[in-house]
Amino acid sequence: MAARGRVQGFQATDSPLESARFARRVRRYELGTGDGSLMIDAIREERPDLAIVRIPTDRAELVTDLAALGGQFVLGDCRVVYTRDNVDRGRTAGKSSRGFRLRPSTSTDGPLLDVMVERIFAGYRTHYATNPQLASFPVTDGYKEWARAHMGDGERRCLIAELDGEPCAFTTVQVNAEAGVVVLNGVLPQHRGRGVYRDLLRATIDAFIDAGAGATVIATQIDNRAVQRVWVTEGFTLTTSQYTIHINFIH
Image (cartoon, rainbow, N blue to C red; front, top):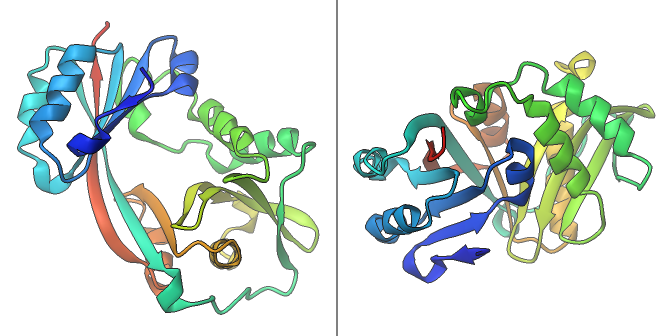
């Protein structure tokens, strides 16, 4: 079962990469503005090995119902989503470093991306870390898979930033006419504090505009405040906040 529930106000999709990585069936659920009881009924009926559920923070009353489904309940994180209106805001002020450029990844960039992911996200905590069944899995393994899965020239893309010819950051995105979504991005530790992240963000936004995307969407955990300060100064506004919840139906 690939997807269901869109017309009922929630999305439900299998997650093949996570299922393979964690050796269990992982299914993701995300509630929009619909009836939360319909999503909860779907989780109860489908009962995957691991349900990763996102609900709006203003629907916190659903936490009790989710906890009552019978699995091991884990509160993962609070996720915030920011959006920039590319049509209204227009292009950015451009790069601040003359030596900065953003290029598409090539078929030979896989090993480079693996190294960058290891260095950028070493010690980084995500909602997986709060789940005792998943805490032993290195988060960087999953991020490597995501980065490599976005190497191409379709809606999924991986872009590598260079500073004076040296790789310094990367971003993975999904882009169409409606919006460009930043899936994963980061700056190598030795290049932080030099304005590289702002250059990366601006270059990504302008790439979305060039592709005809009417908005830029980006998300992070609520306690990752440094990047949110940059987003606000680049024309983003907070549009959504969500709780990420894991329900382990196998132990």
